[in-house]
Each structure stands twice: as structure tokens, then as C-alpha cells.
Image 1 (cartoon, rainbow, N blue to C red):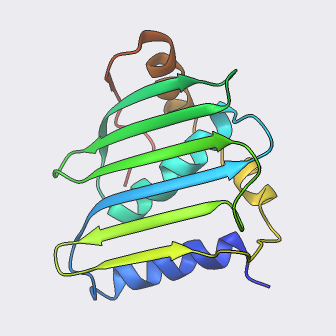
Image 2: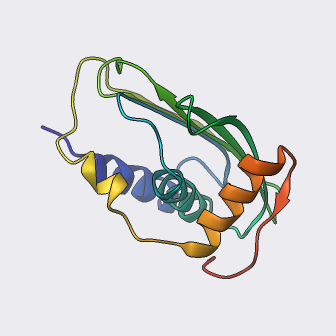
Length: 153
């Protein structure tokens, strides 16, 4: 059985190998039966930020925590972008849909009927107060929000 940590490590290793060239876009969709919280969204954003190895400059949020449907558009300093989404509902397979696009290739993950045994790792990941505050501001304002430089690579 594969863990979510293993998937994240495999993505990081593939990016580090330069087989994709430089990563320029990530789409990470997580689907689950619990409503998302800001700490979960911040953990997903931090994971994507680490993959792209660029400081996050702006983020824009659509949706609400109450509805369970949230999408975050991320814009990074050197031009990379990402879309991080959480969808409330019965997950298809393990509930993870992932695309990483580089300037020389792309990688995809859709595990179909597989399941991860460490999904709790996302909810218990490292706490980034700066990222959480930026997500909360974006959810409230409905506008792109600048992200402070703290806690970034």
C-alpha cells in the first residue's frame, strides 16, 4: 500500500532529477469526506511551494471552507503557477489528482482505486502561520493576496 508521503517524495525526487526540466505548473486536487481546514490547505500549498522551489508571491481563493469546495491559485516569484483544490465528496480512488508540468515534460498521478494509509499526515503536517493567515485573508477578501516572505525557500 502506498502512502501519501511516498507520493510526495516521488514527486520531489522526479523534480530534483530534472527529467521534467524546471517545474512551472502544478495542479493538486484532493477530494475527501471531511470539510477542509486552513491548516490542511496550508500544508498542500507548502508541499507545492517546496516542489516548485520558488517563493510564493500571491494567492487567490475561490470557494468557502463551509461548502467544502476551495480552490487556491498560486503565483510564484519566478513565474511558476499552481492550482490547489479541495473538493468535499466521496473520493474517486484515493482522492488525489496531480499534474506537474515542467519545461521539458510532465508527470501525472491518478491512483484510481488505490488508497493511501497516511492521509492524516496532511492534516497533521507542519504548521505555517504565515501561510494560514494568507489563505484566511484570501478566503475573506475574494481578491489576490500578497504572501509574506517568511517560511519560504
